[in-house]
Image (tube, rainbow, N blue to C red; front, side, top):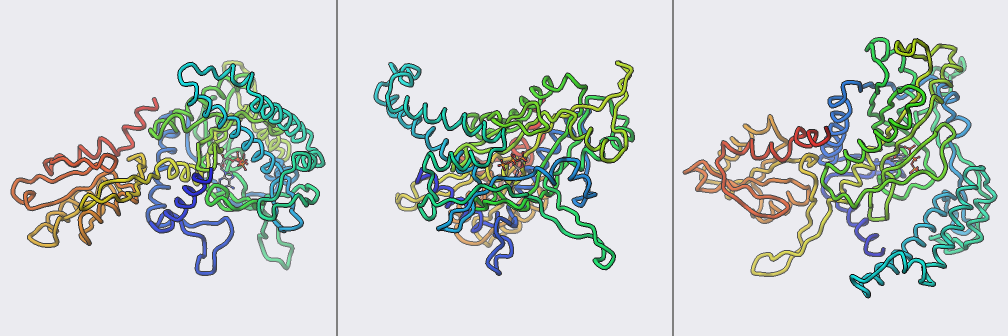
Length: 518
Ligand code: ATP
């Protein structure tokens, strides 16, 4: 675990050093849980968004896009339940004066117990080799039995407390299981209170009563209030979906996990409107589709898992998360929710406007049910970087060992696709290199670099995850060939300049990854 925390720290430092992510307003010492994306960060982020957008809107003829405003009528948030119920249970430690989410403290404890169990199993697996029977081990090892019992007890109390909205019981779990504040190390806790996560501001002149409005805490409501506009103008037939990418804002209590939990972040959400009664079938459909989308990036299937919700939101009749193995454990990257007709019905009630669908097959009107897929761009970004970050021991100059820091990013997401490097800064090599860049820049994000030794230039490209380095040498002038170096293997091959576009396109084009999804 210590090692993993170390990896996370290195990753955060790497993001800053190589222009992926900077703290917001850094010259003023930053703003908690707000971040800016640098020159490579913005490219990676755009590539993630394009992968998502194209997979939704291009590949499904019944999914269309939308770009709704961030500011919305305040009643939207009354109807959606956010004004009354978009709360997190918070608890303070009286000694450190730090604030925590009570549910997260308990979840962390459960994760620690699970890790203990897994450690025992891994140890035993090593000891017994092929003859190891995990089921039998779980049923007989006293330490595993005791930990599993404790885990089950906490889990059932926790789920009940969440479902009953029982804040006292949440606190009691923290007391009973002796959860300590990681900062002060004490158990001196306050009561648990609810805290609304929405930011508000004012619109209009204050003199004649400005209106209190909210910064949207999710993009979904912009889709719901436009359901009828899109359905009518697009002549959409059920089932159909509306996809949107945009900023969302939450006044998060705990703001210590880099871009995992931000106060300003970006979501990619899709609401899929279906016939009532068919929602669970579509829920399964989108679960499978979305997992495939993640896995098709080739970062390793074992890094993903589903996690079904212990507590269903008041509007949902099924919900699951797609979790990614971050350096700090499996964490939610995407939520898939069956939201019933809650949102549309509620907007119908509050607005007094009918938000229904006339189903010609059934010959009747009804409020559609909704399946939502909701993924955070920033969490996806973090998961991609966490999966890609590697430190390798390699043999450097004079046979000395050195560390190569490389981002093994999925080529389709890499900010720069190829770097063109003249071996020396003379003899016409820079001219040929620039000619190649000028030719390929219409297809790919290319970089030209002539500074420092070729080895150092390769390292710089490895550190930002560039899948290909093209080196121009004297032979290139004679026979129009160049070497192409592959980031992951560091292998080099000689190829004709005119073949470059096809070779690179084959590996980095979105087309190839999208084709895997259908
Ligand atoms: P969590 O339980 O971690 O607070 P959530 O269940 O409240 O997340 P949703 O409301 O389902 O999250 O939001 C959908 C997605 O938006 C999440 O899966 C996540 O990727 C992203 N997201 C939510 N809150 C944040 C945040 N504060 N910072 C970055 N991304 C976020």
